[in-house]
Length: 170
Image 1 (cartoon, rainbow, N blue to C red):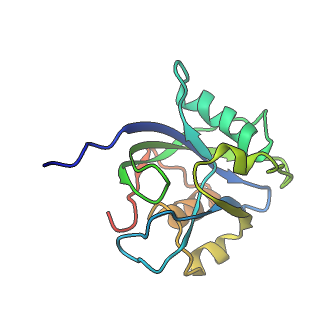
Image 2: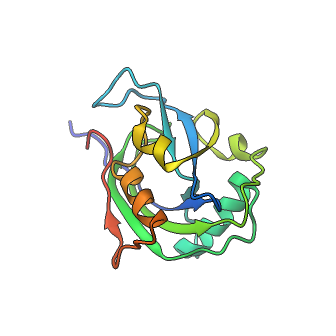
Image 3: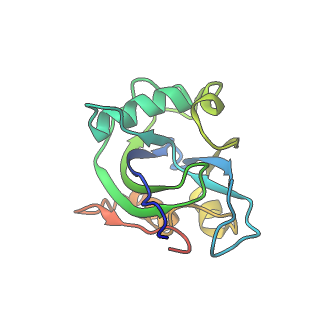
């Protein structure tokens, strides 16, 4: 008997930077253990979520930033990366087709009071990460390569075409 194929989910996420070039990430509790590191209980991820019918990735990114961090008027910049493939850390495993967009906020003010209500995984909290902290941490940051990409973007090095990232353990 073969396993059911995973549902394909099209997703838009944002690399959200404040004026100090800190990156905003959301910490989630992993519902399932990570294949590469079963002891890692939590992981950090960018704000964003699934597209609704008729939405573009940019529209979904803007809507999700409003729902998750209370920023309703974000300017959605260029797509800087993508990550496609099976993702199993959320409550519902999916074949994720993620597109990542650059967003620069004028300050670090966010409102996350609605965040936990919109997620299917337990939310631990949010944090603005300095690039040094991001590069030095042992915390699980998804996807692989996000910290390096964030550092290059902060230096003004935007990729000419979206960079392909991968899930840890993929």
